[in-house]
Length: 306
Image 1 (cartoon, helix red, strand yellow):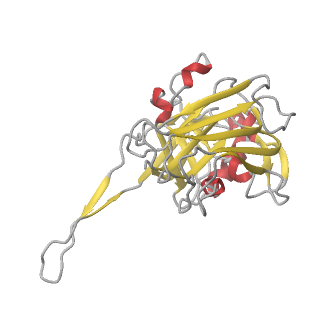
Image 2 (cartoon, rainbow, N blue to C red):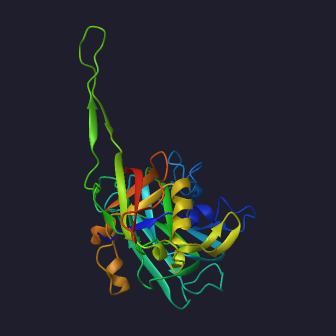
Image 3 (spheres, rainbow, N blue to C red):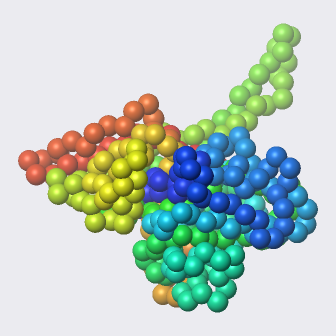
């Protein structure tokens, strides 16, 4: 099964981890609620949220100091419904950094809404064009109320090269819950305590060659790690980010769009709308040989569906 991994959140790394503060966030329309600025949804802290102050929808512009590899996004921890979502606009023109880029060549804008009202993660992989160098983008709320929120938003380069997810693996069909029946001192039942249960996943990437693990051609691998900018080998890139940061797993890449119009809503992409938000379970294993020439990589993770 051909899946994808979003392991480097350029929104987080380009803002929170840049010591010079070169990445800027500005509000082109509307205002965020007090204490709930847009930076709250890119701090990789699920306990903080981005909200709007009133009925005026918010449009946020993010300007990076240089163009970054980016071909999609994902959202986890939200209460958006089918009538709500986000509009994302970006351009392949990386030089002009003026406030508005409506008249720029090669401007792309897509609107995304969750597939249902179950608060599951949603996202997309942009395929128009396939590989982007994004220096700036705008994110606009659609139909939000003052109660709407997002706690985690990630944008970057979905890694698709050699990401073949195979059994044992639990598809993100629905979030299981456990029901704990508690009793008082007299033995009478108290109110039920129902809570969701995160899934233990064994994400198994199979049949790699040594050359595959050392491959540096994916545009996602050209990034800065500990101040060193270069095209990193796949094994070092995934090994670094998977072991240190939360990440998204796309269950399957699904169909390929043939035009911009085909990406109007995330709900029209059922396969691409099935995501896990994950953290590594205890530790990240190294790839191991399954035959004299092929390797497997078993990634133990804890995945969240809502």
